[in-house]
Image 1: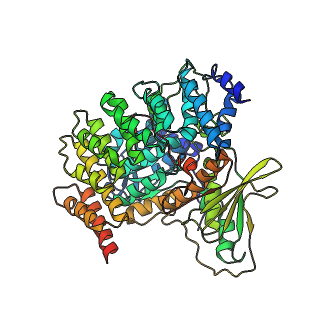
Image 2 (image 1 turned 120 degrees about the vertical axis):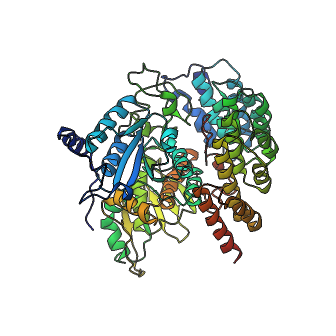
Image 3 (image 1 turned 90 degrees about the vertical axis):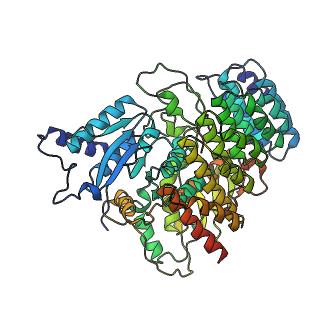
Length: 234
Length: 405
């Protein structure tokens, strides 16, 4: 049945019947607790991804790799990151594969990607909470493309550790949009720091954002944060 | 408390049409009147996503004397034009501004609050961006598309002190007949409730069609995977069986979240576990038909599609339950009035985003358990499936560039 499904995948496209390929996603769920079955399925999916199948078929493969992909999938998926037609779905899998090789692939791609696709990779790095990416993201905070810099700020906010906060604090964005993103990310970092018991560093963030030079919305957020710190340390 | 009926599209058009037919005399939008607060006391609102649900929400807010509705955003040109005509007719002016891109609407400093009724794949981004822009938010249900989105939406609301209300009016209005006796202790301590709702979301591979409407297709897709235009893919009809976006996993959790938001929201209200999330979900099969049971930390059991059991079937016990007052809407005008009241007072609304997220979590846990065909444990504090690397992959999904949370 699985052989037939992979055969059907060769002709799968928008508008074709989904049923013939469904055994592939069924096999992914059924492979739970069976490393050999997962490995075998992943190998077949990667072979399909490298073959001449439709965009929709490759999208389908990436969806299934989200569940069964491993370190072995990273080099194949990473080759798609620079392809505008496949970059997102490559990330669809890479972002959710816990292997460190998947994180490496996203980080390594950053300098090679055009702005729009770079924003996607930055977003996936942030969603993974990849603490190893702080240095690379810090360098992007002052990127000439404000959308890239804004994305880097948001990603650092998702990582949320002390190093990410320090990177954000050191940034000097000229664009108002990026400034706003940096402040939002710093507030997110402060929340993460407070959640793990680092009230001192969280309070330092809030103190630095509570001044009159900040917009009212930010001052109020910082004041709420200071109260939360006080409650945590009381 | 009187029951508020959700305004229908027909109600809205009737009102707007009557207003448009009236002669232009003077606009109460320009100044206060005996029965209308002055502009400085009105909540200035805009709407994002004015389809089937958005029209109803818009009509409800538009008809409030304490709201000044000034802007709307939709990726469909025809929707923008029709909606503007209705609003301008209502106010007897030409002041309503229309936008294709929500970012332009959110950038307006004069807007206090927005209502959001886009497809679900946009909800988290829009709610978070609205909070960052200092707006209060009324967001249609289901509020989230993935498990990870909920905590981020709650964090944004709390960070900026925003009032963010979820959108199921049925939770209170449809299920009151169960809530009142349950909270009065008439059923004793509740053991379980069953919810029947279908179907699960499906993959959409509808074929490309010629575009017969003026729609910003890239913006409609937004963070979802790219796909060719197809009128069923983006239809806002209430179908959950393949004829609208509600059916498809890239944009919705299917019937499980679409109606699940109402039913699970109602059931968890009846059982007074709105502030909790399940600790585990167990996958069962009986005669080849799957169903689920959720266990809450306090021992309460929630079932989904339990065989031979009706929807909202309540299992009580002989163990006494202490009667308690039932929370409800504040202000006047149902769930919309509750939201506006809270915008003014800064209180938490009846469907505060945290409670709305908790009921959406039930739907998402169920969808994941059905997809994996197995039982799952859920760590509420860490928002993950402990020790379950595969299930954790389904907590969120990558968003199409340039969109991110």
